[in-house]
Length: 304
Image (cartoon, rainbow, N blue to C red; front, side, top):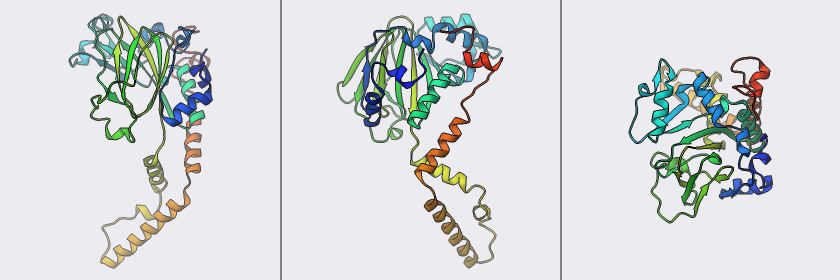
């Protein structure tokens, strides 16, 4: 059963993985245990999540060769099984966003990795149908790719960029030959650093891979945090347009600047990160339906 970062990355050690993580270099592991990731997710559980309605349709993305209206596979807010199967037979791909919110084992694993790294950690699954592949693009998050079933070919075509947010809206075309080009088979593990330009070419037949996505806090998060600290501050809640003369407005401006500088000088990165960690700890337990024990055990009957 995979429940820790060390379980996930074996046979890499945590020190080896964290070196790749901090230095933003690719890590690739061939496995001797092909079924090991099935303890996190398998076909039966995905089928159950969709058929039962436990997984919200709003979180599911269908990627096809041409745009498809949701009405082509959804009836009365539920998936039409026959239409859905037909889409897959014609080469559509499925992306299950934020799967960690609906699979307790993934929730616990993501939380454990978040506690260890201090980052926001989520899970996403992708089902492919053996046709074509995703165009090259850039992710803003680091990704741990876990191949659960089938196979996919991954090409990383450029080194990491300084700020992937600058390029995320327009995926870059590869400028050089891939520096990484491997077929991931069942049980294989791949770490893709944020900012790498990559392309995933789908293998034959149905394929399922899970992505554990890590997103670090950065300077803009500190700015947002400071803004939230000032949301109830009396100085910052006063009106700006109701002064009789310019001198009164200037006095208010001086007070705002002084209060802002005071707040900036008072904050610390350690305090910011500690508050994030405390907030994350309060969100550990999820309980969607049934008894608490059932929710902690997983959905759809007994699991591995």
